[in-house]
Length: 269
Image (cartoon, rainbow, N blue to C red; front, side):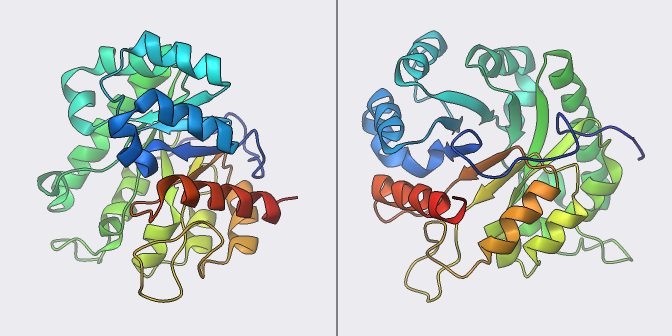
């Protein structure tokens, strides 16, 4: 599909700064399971100014918003499961809006919805609908990748991937991408090339690092082998608005997210 407008508010992105760095709260899910609001407070004390939600911990949305305001945190957006988009769309978007978020992000899709090219085309059409619904509510829609998006689809003669089809079959004015640079690199994709390919369609990036050795699945940003001095400017050139720290397997959640933030600060000052 062809469009001339962009998911980003303007075609020029922002460099990482205290105003553009956020934490994906999935990273601190272990302490949050015991004390969600206390975890938010600790994240603010570490120095983050914004967060991306991945569930609300059973805390009522008005109480969460009050806590964000008290701690000086901004909710830049939230991961919203595909099922919520399909089964409770108005409520799901209202939650993101009430928290002050700007982005509603599908974090993944089940295997049945990506089994072949026809399934992916149906998914792309659904994403366009979700994007239109988000725009009507003053939000932007995005999809977050893992590694499987870059595997060739079994029935596509051209060897295209799920990501190829989503990029081609969705309306750029409605559907953006939250590019997880770690997962792209894990799939054998050059994340800098991917950022260039997704210019004006990558308002969000997820940041975690690939360890130099196999002693842990992932690492704080700056403690691994990904070339951040090249990737961060490439993200800004691609129109990125938010740089979101995330680790799937932190060794010490609070220590790791603080390490990522300090490393990012050192890289960008």
